[in-house]
Image (cartoon, rainbow, N blue to C red; front, side, top):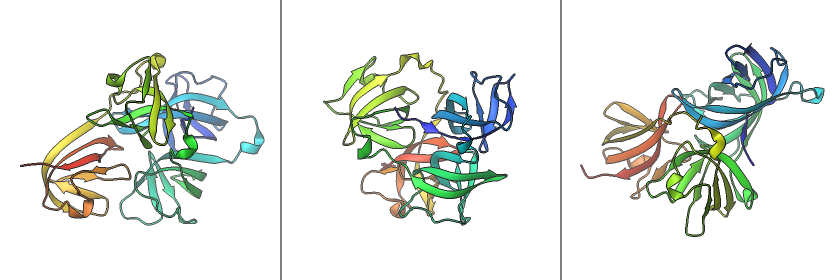
Length: 281
């Protein structure tokens, strides 16, 4: 099973009454937080992406105090990378601003790519010593990947997992504790993948529906202008990333003046396009 890990790191802002804490600059909540864990303890936090009213966040699965002193001083973050304006050497990873001024990013990295960042959190930024691309590729074949469904197309033939990678559903896909109709955003599933095809999808019915309400959107209109990672319709800005799908031979560079239909999700307060197609006005 595979889930996003925000750790290890040093825990701060612990509030046992409210079941909240912070790690590596990320504010989280976890009802199972031990009363033995206090500020400045080193912990390992495992979590899955989830939606909140403010966009993409994390559902904490466990918080374990780290006794091994070899891990002390070792900080990690994982998440979908988003550019913070045009400012050089800085990008946004969820709630955290990552400073990579001392290193080079992997070749070919794009907005929306899932990355693992090693470094140290020094307020107000996370200072990166290494940034690695993390994708669901052939290394995950025949392995069960656990996660939250974060996008499904209209025919339920392709779905996105953990805002990180997409899988195909075809006639060979088997379902356990559910069926194709249950492929909806917010469901927790375990997926067995072979060459990008979901061979088995198991629905985790004991998850409790704690993923929150995903904020999705759909808009139509003429594109009035474009930028390197966004376009504008009627004064409203929409962003594209590595997982945006363009239909009808469209691409970002050709959108200006075109009447389109755009569907997507709201991540960190930004409307991120997941599917763009030409539309008759």
